[in-house]
Length: 336
Image 1 (tube, rainbow, N blue to C red):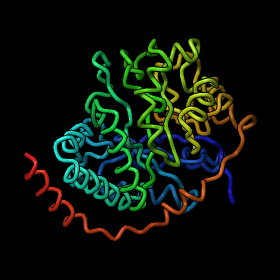
Image 2 (image 1 turned 180 degrees about the vertical axis):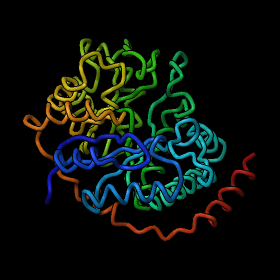
Image 3 (image 1 turned 90 degrees about the vertical axis):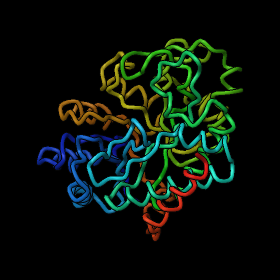
């Protein structure tokens, strides 16, 4: 089985450039992540993902952050607008049976439409539980304030995506809900005790397993007061691997976020040394991408695409999205 540099990179625009093709051929990254800057129309996006696979291979992991609500990377006119997680979590709290069906339908429709344009990994579900004084960066991206509802929603999303050809990514492990600062802008520090985190924040992650998880750029002071989770051996090994029991691949959150106070090159190396399996870099800056790839290529262990992911990627969706949309519409009307 082929092995790849443990790197997920972005690309700059709606087409893959010659320099990006050369980068991919030279460094052989594990995957590519898509953002709104890459999504102009359904046909264009389909051509882009096809072009990426022509350069690489048919099972190239192509990721996206298509959560719904305010975190939606696909926003062109013919796309379906998906709902924020909290809207769906509220339905679960109102009626567990109908709410569960609504969330499953929502996720299946999303998977079908992502596969149509060549995307095979979506970085959901968000399993964070927002606290009262949380920064707002999670907010309605979370399904609920209830750990049980978040855990149940996670199970439904994981099952619905996985059985319809899209691999899920649970995030932001081991929990981002108490951050008082947006980690895109600065480094959050959480002072909550490990025992309390274990009782609440870790709970949805313990109750859900997946092939992929995204770690959080947060200092958990009672666990490791000197390093954010993505760079901390204690957080990755003692908490995520042992206490939570996650055994899939762990990717960093975007290594170019301002929560990381060292260079992207040093952060990439340090995250892998801490126990992360994949470095995520989203902004498409070629200079940074080359620098990161050069920094990790001699130190990193090359990584396969696990068989479980290949099995998901091979699934051909047979659903009829319009029929499911009609059923979802009826449930939403019934629960109004």
